Length: 440
Image (tube, rainbow, N blue to C red; front, side, top):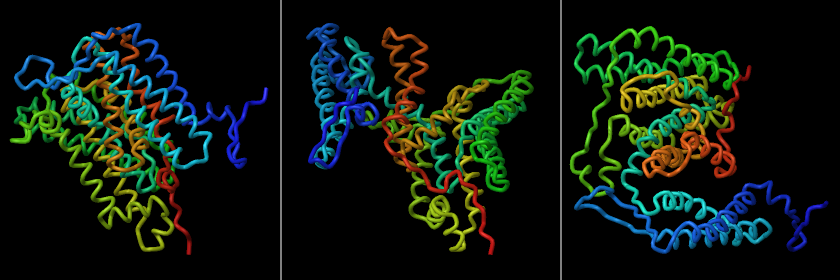
């Protein structure tokens, strides 16, 4: 049966089939369905006395700040907003009015943002959730993702696709911890051993990046294939090193010590979130700042972006394309190695096979989500960090969710973000294309 269609002004025809084949249409329908569920399901599951408390400290404290939210009222209002926003999205899909389209887009964005508080309000009904702790843990779990995405940005901005971030992170985590273990076993001072471990992790990531650059830039091997080879190689090398070194030695569980920034760490709410952390956590913000400044306000950043967009034009201007790409790929590897040290040296104090758990691939999703910009990457990393901590929050609140689903949340968010929320994300034009110097 032919799909029903609608046409405005006789200039443009959109079928109802398009609703289920476009990003806007799919999300509009989903929001409407969720809104209907909220309006019908909320009164059946919650009473007018049900309260969700967002607090700055769940425990009893003189500094405790509470934000009580009537669960039923919040969900009913959210349901109305979802139905309204989804309806506007569908109307905007069939309309040629640019103002209406902008309003519809804003409504859909608001609906998307409301997902986070809606989930928390439902999960913490008749309970309290520590917002400060939630944000602080989200930021810390976002650290390797943001740093991995920055590693990918340095490479792709110069025209080299790097899917080997996972392998570089894993290698850094392994050899950083091995260095720490061997030095501690040799009675080296703890702080010196920790510094050497972090340095070894950074260098290990750089070595793997140099291999990627050698294969993909010098020998012009397909960059995806090169990255895949490095990921497989990293799994084998780290597994062998763990079996031969760590299992045969007395590996401890020593981690980098927390550093509270004086005065700033005492600021209410922001202090515990931003200024009470460990060294690699702080380095994430330094790298974000440095990357932004270098890419957009220095000659090297201009050359990097030129090489990533049009290497032939850059070569014509006298820029050494291969040198720029080699340098940026190695810088990316050094950052990825530091991100790997977060797992073994800053968080767990140990090394296990595959302990990065696919965070390097999630970092690539954060890179695409952030559209190859430092601030966008940070937002993407924070989103994935929050999705990670959401599972722990469900467990703490004793939400009856299967643990297997909790483990799936970060990867489900990755799929949803790449499939629907990102929109049209176009990376550097020359990314993934080996550079062939034109003969004179």
